[in-house]
Length: 323
Image (cartoon, rainbow, N blue to C red; front, side, top):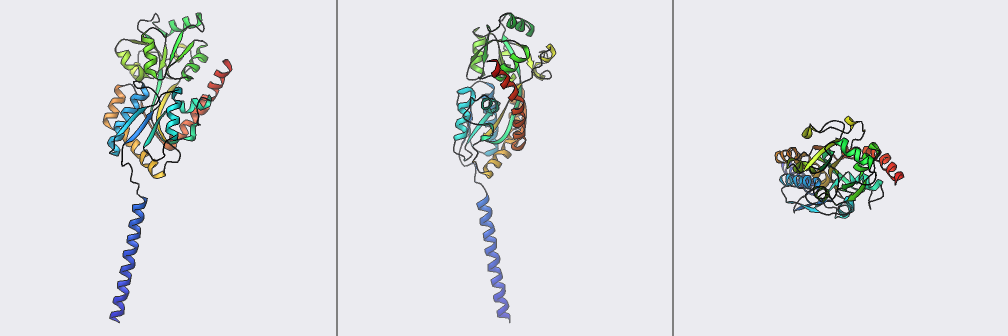
């Protein structure tokens, strides 16, 4: 009897160890070993602009969370379409991320991109900003009224330096203010602003972070903010709405990956992004640079983009009819 009982107990022990071993193997199999090498973030605009600044600050913060180098690579062209398309076609392993901007919505709506808005797998939104209408401090335009008066007196004559084309900031401004001008395209805010500073363009519309340094240096003059309320960092600058022009617009910047990216990798990136935006150095940089932190997880970001599609569709359609 004792021998039989011993055999039963021994059998149960073997079975228990086998089950434990299987559970351990399952847990190890399900656990994603990511990242194990450096990660690349494609920024679809030129170095020196607002998207580049956000991308580099976020990359540094993400590095601290994931424990791997995160390198920014600028891929310009097509108003952001080239870089975003390259990111979409990248190997879906979590090692190539793309910083997508509002152009992820506007370009497909205008037929200017080889992708659709929701072709990407969204990780999260990082930043949202209004836009600022600026001129050189050497310009004769001292106020937004000065610029508007000259635009109306000389339709289709003044040069607008666009950081991306088609430019929906310009489309909304044109429609709301009932003015026309020449849009001169550039690959990012930095080269566009250079044209304004050099006197080759009359004005531009950019994010606050893209113009802060030049405003602080006394080289650019902000005339108006295209937002519902005044921007905290430019409290003395009126909104267009205060001047009777109903035009509010801005941009946002988030992270996306190819659609086939594994769930476990995407989830780890989403969790990492949520932590990265809270990194003290990232927060300090964004605040000092007039760049608004606006984190949205993947689900909220998708809803946000769906809403922006509804906002931009009529704006862009109206712009097409005027062409």
